[in-house]
Image (tube, rainbow, N blue to C red; front, side, top):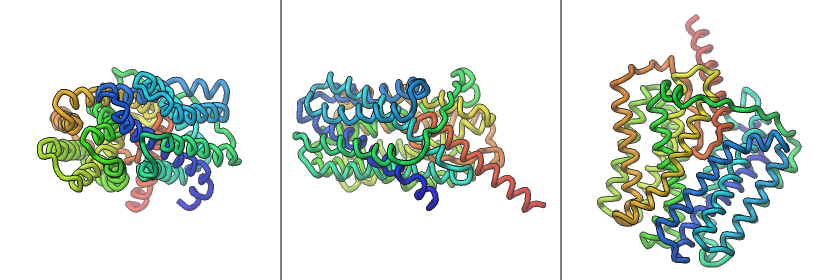
Amino acid sequence: MLSVLRNSWPLLLGIMLLMVGNGMQGTLLGIRGQIEGISTFQMSLVMSAYFAGFLLGSRTVPDLIRNVGHVRVFAALGSLISAVLILYATAPNWIAWTFMRVLIGFSFSGVYITAESWLNAASTNENRGQALSAYMIVQMIGIIAAQLLMNTGDPSGYLLFVIPSVLVSLAFTPILLSAAPAPAFETIQRMSFGRLWQASPLGCVGIFLMGGVFSALFGMASVWGTQAGLSVKEISAFVAAIYVGGLLLQYPIGWASDRMDRRKLILGLGVVGALSMAAVFVTDPPFAVLLVMAALIGGVANPLYSLLLAYTNDFLDNSDMAAASAGLLFINGVGAITGPIVTGWLMEAVGTNGFFLYLALLNAGLAGYAGWRMTRRPALSAEETGAFAVISPAATPFAVEVALEAAQDVTHDDAGESAVNKD
């Protein structure tokens, strides 16, 4: 890990600063929206627009990189992100924000694709898994730090829009001034959805549902907080708890997934997520309990995403994994676009806590479908499954491909060691 930090610290530092900027804009818009009198459903459209832009970017930016190069794409999209973060405050209108969120989602997708390809090029086969782990950790740290910075200014003013804009601008300095050469960029082939469904119906359904869960957590948590009457400090603590839970529970759940039927773990996590969110919806608990529940749903949602990808790849050849991951990420993106919209509709239809009802329903749907699929297909043995790879729900197809390759390397190394020990 030390060698990874020594060789890749400019990139990791830049990514952390980018995530601070991205984490601040999501929370800040949810709070500022209420100040400007924007309705819950209108804010849900604003939040959904980010994921539409992100999905569009994941499909089109690779061609842009091949045409003009990594450095130009990276610098151009970074400038767009910095500009949009400032423009939010100058045009506090939900229609303008919707277009800006599409643009910033597109730009962040392109920036992540470029950064992840650089990270892969700077890594070796021996430390690629560690590099991806460090990358995911600094992403989480950046989002958590963003919530702390939310308490440094007034959401009705300009300062909180200036801070992420400056941080994003600074994020590109260590990356672009580093000596790392621009890597070669290859096209990721796509698998047909019919073939993907044939390989793993649970993977397809689960990834779609988790896209809705993640986008609701990332986009609508601050909107819920403002509607529930929480202070800025409480909202930032609530959002931070979601990511703290995701950071802490990724690895224990990953460890368990390599040692049991992954469908049982998916079912169990879905039940935990459904029951915890249903309890919040019904009881309206005190804030301290809300923080615990936020950490719990974050700790369930983030590992479930990685778990579903790992489960799907258990039924694919190594040569098909990259194409399958691209298809799954498209399904996840469609789910993410619908998430905030349905959440906003429920919050207006049944009350503010419709936010938790939505999360409960999606987790219950995942648990129920996983249980049904267990009756349709026998379980694989631990020897037949691949290793769990820690993957962020915001990862691009390139990062997923690299993470899965690193996980396969771990699987093959473990298999080789077992064979030697048997001999």
